Length: 295
Image (tube, rainbow, N blue to C red):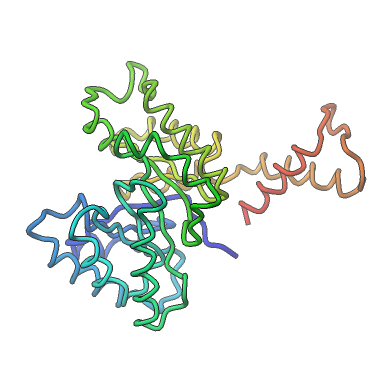
């Protein structure tokens, strides 16, 4: 059974203290960050710290996945990142400032070599690119759904607002009501649609104000309702709220089970009534997906 991917918590790769506490946060995925959370002069030391932590965690029967965010593929840093951490068998790599699926080919080729070198199963290291951090990448995001660009390692797609706003000179990302402005709503929707078209998970971006728990609860529940599978987090205090928001409620599960039971009791029927409402095959498919997600 696949492990849950509701909450994706960033942890600085140069902080032994925070890495030591990370497993107790309850996050489904821990992302050891070698990019934005680490100053340029600390990159090399952070690789060593990350490698030691991954090695210490390797083989443990943990309820969370261990990922690493490497540096962008248009820098000279990412190869050193990958070479340093693959011995610790991370479940996957988060790829920042991704410029498109073709750019991932060089990374995939190195992963193939590193997996063989460390005795890891071929293709076991998955990828989650941040697909919106430049204007060009946001405009070409749909190429991830092109079968000719299929990347077997792709677990999902996620997006970010901070780098994109800097790239285009935007002075705001949300309106007076705390909602994304039009540009960022478009990018978010495109990420969601592209991920589903490609058959991979859509992971919503982070809520930057880690003290705003009410706002986080609202945006996380919106993400779940819109079809995202999980959400990025930047503080341990956000994890519990995200996990709850991206978990089906008891009422949702009961309703889904009733729909599945109704159709299974009436095989071959295209539509039927349930509690005074008409339901059809799309309801049936959605209910099955919800139950599978809960499992």
